[in-house]
Image 1 (cartoon, rainbow, N blue to C red):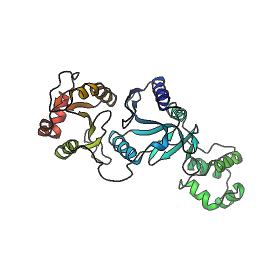
Image 2: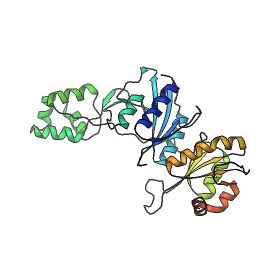
Image 3: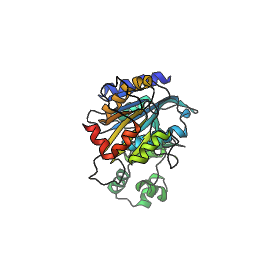
Image 4: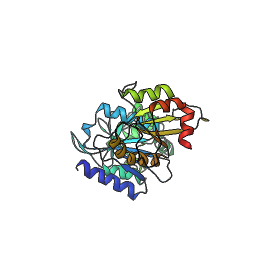
Length: 309
């Protein structure tokens, strides 16, 4: 499948399952599709590549920072890797991101989670509680169960405590012996930057973070950045979560092109939005425009209040 075919399939899936979504037309975009379910409880960021090996560490780190701030699930959808076509029903990994075929994404969206994860080997997502329950129903000790299944006591202990996952053949062998389903769906992973520290980005965007004290995630494409408050794990529960989608530019043509993307993205996130520019563009579809100096002068609370009016 070509990248465009993959994107078309992904967008069709979101539409079919009732997700609101925005699809970028820029192949250099940090994410190609942003989507949320009808209840706005789940946000997905999708990057599409024909060959997933083209997904670089820098791309992973940038997408990870955005998904962390937005509490979103980032996923790489592709057609193949260096070993061949991506298998349907299998979740792969590249750096810290989940990788899968369009069909496997469809399984997630329809509630039929795949049970296989491929890292170096094809692993099965075994449910430790189901395995313990099956052994207890047979009234077997772990040594007895080990002899019954032909699996070492040490590995059974690891499986029952979720320390490691069995290869698919071992899981299938146990299910056939016991006549019971022992697997569960592969849970979405939280993408994290491969290295700590800020990513290299425009100095103006950094100064917003410095002066206002927001948590920030730089996007560049399709918009410039997200600012967040109350989005940090462990932050006080009484801090109201706020996200601001921002585009920064002093080019009126660029501003005009990005206005639609800014509106669509902020509508999906139900977030605030603004344009940062030293110019005063005429047509911004009602999106507030501030200079960087004006924005920093408002401060964190002042900016949120201004964008709420």
